[in-house]
Image (cartoon, rainbow, N blue to C red; front, side, top):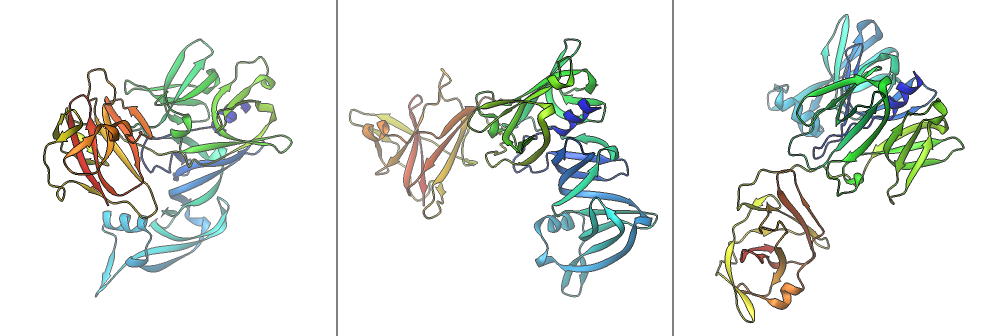
Length: 413
């Protein structure tokens, strides 16, 4: 059982969606469902600490002492409750006032470490009490009460995410996105859309890798692992390997990659616990479907003008400077510009150069030589090229395609 708990404890379920905070969904035997992530577990404890972003909690009605109803003015509601109330037509209207009914619930004994909850929505009352919570909270959950831990399948257009590679004791290798696990099985989403389930006891080794192997794994994981070791030492990073192929439990180990690229091998018999925290480097990205010739800049479709290369400069087809797209830069802050397009040249290389225009009619060859260098560049699974530039000053700029001889002018204000 120690081996199974070790795998469960170090779960890293990753979605490839932008703004995704909830990367795990934990389902309990009493019907409760919590969305968030496992924040902490100690090796010798049967309790996990689960950070919930939202949850539906189901309880035996005998565990509830009191339920108090309270009106909440629409203007003072948090955004998540406003969105839910609007979607479910849950507002109550009295005259000119609109409000949402929320509830405070007192328990007969501590439930998941809490004696009461405030500002929840009662969904069911009586012999069974069920309520919804949209405010982040922390729950103490016993492993024996867990049915399964699940993760949603990431979108096909996801640019960020993590895949796992499992090696089994019969020599099979299974690769895919984490989908679900129980106390005895593990399931992965395969690239062909199927779900593959196998026994946790058959696992001898697993590794993780970013969706884009050319990028750091830290750009693809929404969570960081904090491994606590006997003696008080902690190591922060991302667990990239776990090995259970030794003859004895003392030979089991994990490998954690730190932000500086250093990789640490730590034997599991030295690990006292693992915690997780949100990864500030993670930026969930979703690709778009582009038609041939379609160009987006910060999500806005751009139109190109023809350009002619002369002896001393590149002459642009005339355009109205007041009508070209405008982007706003905050004072004292740089503006990040994300260019998305199908490869503009037959050799597959990015041929766009970003230059500042001193007038609306031409690009000097000197400015082309001193073009703004891209911050990053990648090619998505759809074959889209994504180039990120950083602009520090206001002005008129142009993206010049040196292969097709077209220019995309825009203003930064």
